[in-house]
Image (cartoon, rainbow, N blue to C red; front, side, top):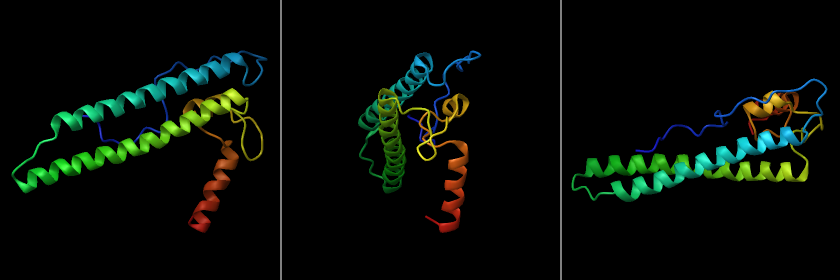
Length: 145
């Protein structure tokens, strides 16, 4: 049965980039490193979608007992909510791959500074540096939006 755990907000199955002294930020090697991370993460998510579809098709049963039917429907509902979050994450991964193609990847959307290799490895779809993200979270707490 596919997992109904929370969608992983980052991909963890990669070798960290070995930063060389004097290396230019977001050079071709670094961009390819992140492209590979994002494509692998997307592939993993797509495979999980396929597993869910097969699971729901194979395990769908018309239980006579209302309790059994309700349990199955709740399990399917949880899986579908997880897959919906993954669908949104796949869209975000696609947007990030587009940023790589356009040469915008790795720089903060608000202030333009380097986001940093290690932060991007922790959260490959990040669009804000840690300072701007922290300020955005503080504003969000204050306004409740």
